[in-house]
Length: 457
Image (tube, rainbow, N blue to C red; front, top):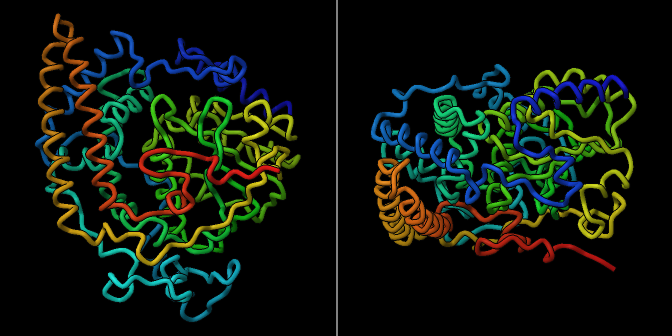
């Protein structure tokens, strides 16, 4: 493992040079204190000035067609024909069906499985649990696409992610942010959110290939990802990509300032070469770096086999140095306990929480608000009004940067930002299907409470 540790050390030294001023992830856990430098609500005067400059850049292009706004190139982690891949998966499902996991067949969605189990809604035309997708994009402008990217976040929280990722270089942050907005439109992210896990591959949801549960010592949600449950042949790439985007978008709901990142545990217990999926690895890494920046707090690679150092040599060059610096390795429960309190650690990994993942299936009428068009229109109108007030205040704030009224306008924006988020959360009830975490009771009315599913003696 010496070569592995040397490679990590080299990457961390690069981060120390490029990102001076921020504590390393190991230092944060040693102190038991989250580093909130550059986070919403904890900005220096210079950082707030950079934020104002980024907003100034954005607002100058706000009414332009999105396609005409300059950005970084859209990254395709792997080259593939999505339509052809989906068609092949459908043909396999129809001509050579096979069971993947506990009665879940290849290419079968949760919606398919629910119909099979008799879980249908009286509100759907054919028993559908979710009404047909209705785009919330008002037009093809940057303004419309930007607000769909913000969704229920504080607007500044999203902007700051790109600023930190580009080390406060405003122009680089702007081009990165616009690329992310364009990517969301191309990938139809809002449609994925609309249908939620109901359109996910059933076997992925039943197996619990990845799921959130508990929090680490810094308060970050823990994502458990057991590689032994994953096999590339079990689902098509389009379905795997959809699942990944849904997971990342759902995790955004579990983050509240100053907790803006997650703790990812790559659990390699019982891992074998049969579990390796390079298209998935490349996709996950690139999405994390380009479209969900500053969302990873720490990644713990747990219980890797002796030969994993060779795999790491292939993966590490794909990683941005900042991401690589957040990777830690643990071989035994004692290693995990450095980062996770025993009450938050699963019993099967040496902790006290006896929780075992089990997919909570949809209920027939759980999405009744999504069928309420009048309610959605009212929520949309209110949100639009709040956003316009925020934009107006932001223009005044930008004009005042460096002047006497800057601090006063910052406070006004903060209040309006909270109102925008509250209005967005209300509209979300009409545009996002309920999912595993809402059904389990973990996420309710904007509050995350893991104690509702944790189990102890």
